[in-house]
Length: 67
Image (cartoon, rainbow, N blue to C red):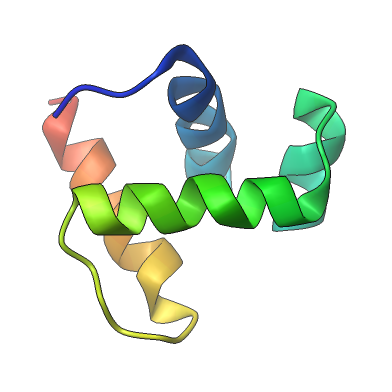
């Protein structure tokens, strides 16, 4: 699965366990922009559940894809 440079930056921070607010601060973007990036990543990876477990599922998929 190909990601944009910004998505890759977000993925690195996500895999570190940072919150949306912390990710936004590190990337110099608003928290709502982080949520928009995450939403696009959820769609790209076929994750549709509307709860916090999405972050975990996405992180696992992305981590496994790097092995």
